Amino acid sequence: MDANGFKRCRCRDENGKDLSQKCPRLRRKDGSWNPGHGSWAGKAEVPAGPDGKRVYLRMSGFKSEAGLNTTYELAGRLLDIPEAGHEGHEARMEILDMIRAANKSKAPLPDYEELYRKYRAGQPLQSMTFGEYWNDWRARRERLKDIRESTLISYTSHYETHIREVLEGTRMDKLFVPVVEKVFARIDEKNEALLAARASADPQVRASVRGKRPTGPVTKQRILATIRTVLSAAEREHVVRFNAASLVKLDGGQKAKGVVWTAARIEAFNVAFEQRFAAERASPVKPKQPLERFRIWLATPRPSRVMIWTPAQLGAFLDHAAGDRLYALYHLIAFRGLRRGEACGARRMDLDLDEGTLLVAKQLSNVGKAVKEGAPKTDASDAPIALDAGTVTALRANRVRQLEEQLAWGEGWQDSGRIFTREDGAPLTPDWVSEHFERLTFAAGLPPVRLHDLRHFAATLSLLAGNDMKTTSSMLRHSSQGITSDLYTTVLPDLARAAAEASAALVPRAATAGPPSQTGGLPTVSQPGGRRPTDSSDAVNAQVVGLSSSRAGGT
Image (cartoon, rainbow, N blue to C red):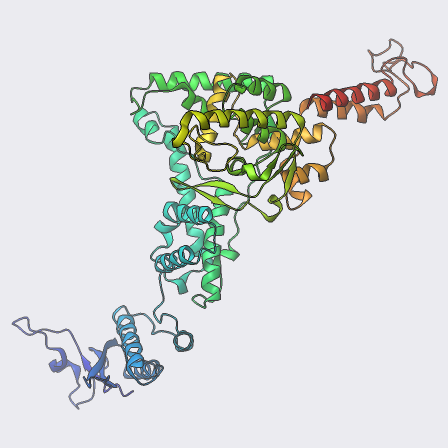
């Protein structure tokens, strides 16, 4: 493409009129171009479209004629990529706009190889922004339904809350690792601002962040996984050359380990709760809703995100909740380790009380404000569960209650086919079930745990009863024993103490631990043979066996 180059400048005459190409300083006295004044510009005709209308490419701002000619040569190659015909002309006009935009912003022209590949692949020629691609990707997921609806809701929450403000306007071909890392730098900034507001002396500032929590390492990993999933699709579709998110490294943080509610921890929690409640009552900034002790109790920090009750504490909860219409649901989760959604979605057709089995085939999930039915979390989740006699008894009583409610509602009864329902037979809302559990816990005077923590407790209880890891993993329906070992092997104090005594008793000792002797400060030798007169290893082992047996019988 011939540039037909010429020079022009921005000089003006005495009337303020732009001289452009007529400026006398553009040329020397011999008629040659003055290299120290003005800039080079060009004008070339582009092949006309089907309507025969003439189209031109004008570019300017070049320091040299050589640079102008080189740019027009590349522009000609770019404009020759589309084939002849109506569709080809539309693509050519799109490329022409891209060339004009690049010249206006003094940016390099589009890469020939990249543009050629996109055209042949039928992809958009202009580089999309991350926000544009996200909208298209999300719409396709909703149409194809190839991702769980609840998962897509989680992805959308990550995008709207953290990703959008950083990446929305970023071009896909500019998504390098440092750009993606800015998302997490921004999260760190917001975390610091939130913590500073919490510590502020201004009560209004503290009130502005009430109920808000910093974004932790685990959530950061999930946000990164969202970006990685989207860019993985873009890489398959050749929208990006590589997945920058897969190269971003974050602090993985430590997974929350189960912590048992001991007497000391409960006392510390109660003190913190009462101090927090007193501070909220004394605050001059009054909340929109009346101050509720339950809400303050629920928001009080705990030693760990995963808290475990002792068997005695679980027994106290079950005794308190025995008259509640959802008692059997909480009993089922606590003893057989169902997930919340699985318990809410359990169907009568999958329950055999005579055989004492329950097949987990469906689960209910909160998707926005709606409740959706879906398959269990993993393939391993779709497995029958053996029920103990106590759970069978609770489920029989639950069925009797349900039949009584059906008679009371008459034609208003909704037969959802669920084992656990609302009073009118409609399916339960999982989020409501969790809050109901927390309110029962508060009313029982027990320390707080999440409903999902009952599943952790079921695993610990199984191990405490003497079941091996394989049996416990099978009960929880994990895909591997490693998951069970990593997440659900919280050791209760009594079991740990018994194990410690059993380990110590395996080492024979010739002396008892006592006060130093007056002759040399050494312990007194008790009797030959490495045996102590009291607290022998046999006696300790007997105590351990007795403790384990009593615990197993109690479960």
